[in-house]
Amino acid sequence: MPTADELISPDSIRGLTAVLRNTFPTASRWRTVADSATTLGTLSLSQRARAVGEALLTDTGHDYAHLAHAARAALTSEDLTGWMVWPLTEAIASAATSSFSDADFDDGLDLLTQLTPRLTAEFALRTFLNADLTRTLATATTWTDSPDPAVRRLASEGTRPKLPWARQVPELTRKPAATLPLLDRLHTDSSDTVRRSVANHLNDISRLDPELATTQAARWTHGSASTTPALIRHAMRTLVKQGNPAALELVGFHGDRTDLKVEGPHLERTDVPLGSTLDFTARITNISNKPVTLAIDYVVHHKKANGQQTPKVFKLTKRTLPPGETTELGRSHSFRPISTRRYYPGSHAIQLQVNGHPYNRVAFTLTPAG
Image (cartoon, rainbow, N blue to C red):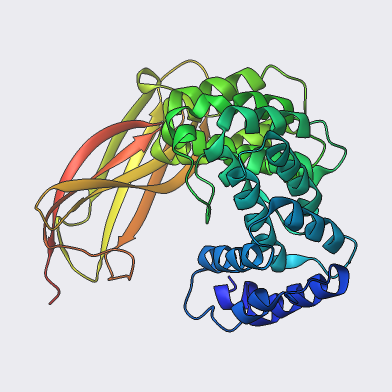
């Protein structure tokens, strides 16, 4: 993935300065914006956007009308595109929400819809949401009817509860149901990009309120759109990984504890040196009179520094079993050191998880290497 200095870079800020000077000359000559290209240093991507946004505000005297005229003039240039757009949207959001003018607030939102096709205005929308959630969501609802898919996507993406790189909107975290009307209007959108945003948005909600997310997805299954199953699979990915039974059923896994006989995991050894592997096998039999479709995972309960065990779910396989059929399973789980996880010698455990239901926890000991 590109780094911050490759996205909002000195070159991109010099490009923004040139666009502004060519389309909206001012007495300041946009000097503060130009100078900001030399002060980005080690700032993160969002910090760079806000720093250059503040430079734009300085050069326009923190006056929304002045900034809005400059932005609309810049939009006449095809060179206004890419990552230089993010700082401009940040400046517009800041000026429009701090002027305490309803007209400026509404005009600022309108400007975001004009700028979002050039990159995205999703990050700047957070400022409006934090300033007035109800008013902003009402306007975003009108965007769902836009002929431009970039604007329709903005309605979903900009209002995500856990949008990456973006400011948090605490009220959306407390009230994840607030954006469901937007998703209802967009989940069958003709644009794959918009539908993917809806799926990511519902996945965010699932991390805050699993029941709300699965209930919403279940309502969508009653529609006729051929794209809905794929959207739901993507939206339920976090809950499926966690073994949430409702999410598993939504994506096509059927079969509960009374349908199955689960044997194992059977471990090749119960003392596992750090740096080696834990090998295990298992058998699952469908003892019901109907086919079952299974998401088969396993859970490793790692010992942590405080001596407690915490579970981590790993994908194993998917199986469809007719009545009476048995599947044989096996896996080698590595305990080789990796940068994202630290292992502690001592008591651990492993168990199978089938369609979200845990089975047969078996203890083993992770021993020091050598």
